Length: 136
Length: 136
DNA sequence: GTTGTTGCAAAGAATTTGCAACATA
DNA sequence: TATGTTGCAAATTCTTTGCAACAAC
Image 1 (cartoon, each protein chain N blue to C red):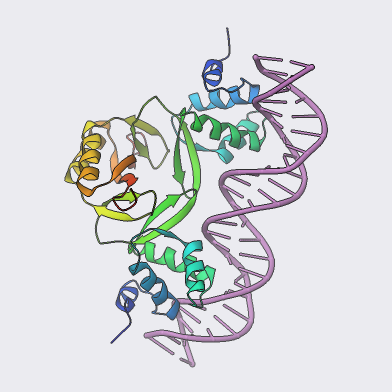
Image 2 (image 1 turned 180 degrees about the vertical axis):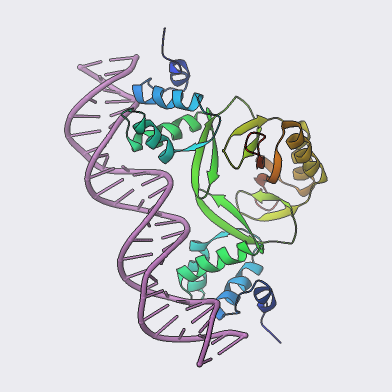
């Protein structure tokens, strides 16, 4: 049986290297968004041999392929494995857990506002921040 | 008559210095969000003597006082003078113009989703990106 | 064997800080 | 005059790039 994630990498046109599989595996295990620096540190502490540059490049490549969502936290980027298609987020500001949500009402609102103001929509983002049940 | 902006600064507990008034004045004149680096360069080219550090500190202070909205663009922060209270944004990705919008439906959605998932809401953000009528 | 990938060291770029001179209230 | 502000230079921090060794296909 093949290591988890190999197919996803190949689908993205990336070679299934040990480092990339390690990153994918680590992302699968966590519900929160993580920065390249933090992930690198954690992997190293866990005994995984991987360079910081590789972590940066892997996270960038995966998000370019649409496999990761990207968040900006205190001026740095945090990544999280995500599902297909467009979705919004419910983010816990304490543990950084991210829950994906879909919202027809938001999509509708976007279209209406843009049309009314004469804009051609290229994208939108609607995230909710709060404290999750566990953190309260 | 007093220079534009002096009162706003005093209200924020900041001294009305020449540099801060210059920044405020520049912000009042533009419909787009601007970075500290860009604003500094433009002020310098316009003959205004002001240091980059001061521009950074002024923009940070003004946004801390709620006078400016902050956007993240390509990893750097862009600022724009904004109105009171909570609002959302319609952003032109070509000219960076920002229009403020209010949306009852979004506020309602936020409350519903958070409650349903057991989150205590601390904030939310809903911005629409597109190309404005002028830029098309 | 080819070609993509890795990782170190170095470079870049945005932002912050120390501190002495200076301006505001 | 007392205290907040400025601005330069230096330091920080996040991120990217050059390039030779290396691994995947």
